[in-house]
Length: 389
Ligand code: 13P
Ligand code: SF4
Image (tube, protein in one colour):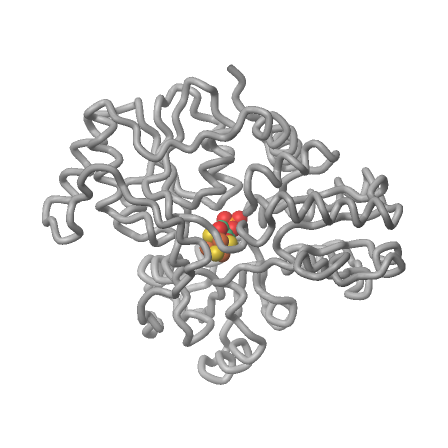
């Protein structure tokens, strides 16, 4: 059975995360017919000195040069597991490269080929806002019994805050284990910055109710919540979301069920609660890939995640019918900032002895962020630790 057409229309705009950083020196033009050969030659010349990590949402022509592909959890593990590489080239977004810098040794350099590859969700929780929120929780008398849990998709400063205050990092692969751990340490969780992953995990995996959850809006006085609401809550969810996964709606699920007979709906837990509850399967990008790999030939799937990954799965599995969950355009614009010209520019500069776009986290921030990341890597089922010098 052939895959039915995807709704590939172009890139979504995500200007919040545009860092507007110029690349020093000349970027090769995208029209250069030798880009693939140039990338391969530079990679071959660097040999084992370079290790290239590629997130599943990267473009195909970039993924082709990745030594390993994965979701944000697997890539953090892989960065920690390669102490011999001098250069870790991170084809993903800024918060992922920061985590790789924290988990690798001081000798290693972590490089993000385009500094404009940020994440609008990570930008929704600034450290000063989170410190102010913690003061609100202290005034309500609950900060001592609240454990902060931050999604990997947050800045190093937020991970540092979490480490300092007895909390952990999680990813969409281990959010359930992280929340179980946190509720063993305290009575409540402050979950940052993705309200949807927090709510979906608390309600669907831990059996909490929607009434146990409140949303803290950093743009409102006291988060828009009373002391009584904060005291009654089990999950205090930060008002953040993913601009890609947040676009899927309950109507997208209903419509695809009328368009495609016997379709299985498979979505990422960054989607809103109504989408996740209407879907048949929910999980991280690694889970989505494994589910498709195990799907019976001839079955039909509507996938609610980033479009580069959905396209790649559709191409790799002609025995299945794979459609994008919504007609709306859904590339992650900042993930797409990493393209072949930036990769070639990065690798050729390394060959010439120049490191561009090194991601280097402040040492004090990194110390506490690493505490939180190491707690995550020690969660049941994680099976990896970070490198020490
Ligand atoms: P995972 O890689 O944890 O599935 O998260 C998806 C995502 O949005 C990455 O930015
Ligand atoms: Fe951020 Fe969403 Fe893009 Fe992931 S997919 S990098 S969470 S905007």
